[in-house]
Length: 145
Image (cartoon, rainbow, N blue to C red):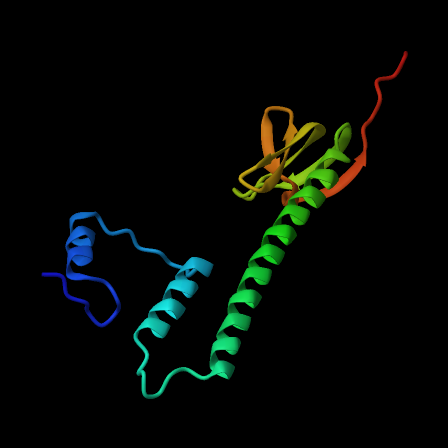
């Protein structure tokens, strides 16, 4: 016999869920929010249903969440593009940088790359984050003696 529990899943659904390994999420996404809203609507008191104002308010929250997620993605993309553009502009220039171990390094930037969302510079045999650069100057040209 299939029974319905308080959150809208059947006992057969619960048995299937128990047999699959659990994964833990640290944030809620739009689908989670919509599932909670649907569960709320399915389990509301028929004598005291949710008001239209509350429903519209919750839908506005879903819309705001979607727009914020889109804006966050766009801002991340723009930030990475800006960093990469700045790093590419340093190719062929001499830079000095403070490294995480407290030492300093200097040399001519040979290339620029993006690693895990961080703009990196190749200086000699070292890679350093763009954010570690402390000074930039024109590369010295070899003299024609």
